[in-house]
Image 1 (cartoon, helix red, strand yellow):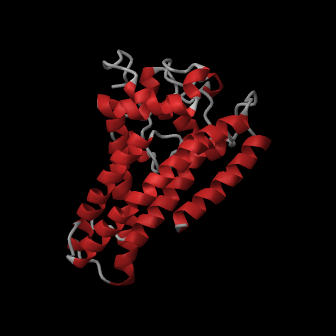
Image 2: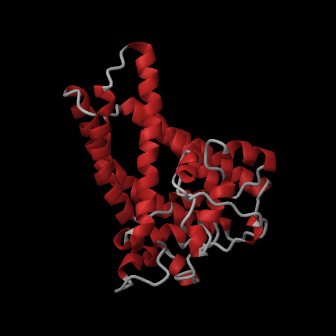
Length: 267
């Protein structure tokens, strides 16, 4: 098990405990069933990720061997260079993640898969694991290309993934954070108050707050949005929110159920 996955499991366990003791939404029933359903998708995706992981290794090693990629061209030797390369990796790969997430809301084919993530009607930390294998497959084929072009090393990528997993588990979680902490976190990273808006079934809110790790991308690209009455947010898409569509087999077939782009597709 890789270090980033170990960090993710520790953070997930802690958040699940906090969701039971200091929840933001207090009327959540069937937490175990909900978690097992999302966890089933996570296990399926973990298998796909493991099979395609050699592509990331190959991309990083090829980039290093041929000194190809943006970070290699900057020529930053020594300890300071390693630190700067690590910081640039985190910033640049997170910019890619922002763009990829936004594309999943704009490109009809990508939305067909990504909507599985948004059909969760009771968001908590396990929602961060709820993705259709098709979406993971596409991103797993694109990420090695990004790693190669940027010249990212495996250690740098692992650091980013550990940070990203920590933050996305947090901002999907049903944990009640103090208002002052939400405000301070929001200055740099995406806290729950931002991402709960993103999971609203109101299209204008769904089409906002795309950030994975850093919150400043949404400010920079005009997709930042807040809402004062978060307790009244209705999660889901307004389509396929019925209980039968929450079962794993139905979630897997969801991208195939529509023959046309739905009018409510986020833009």
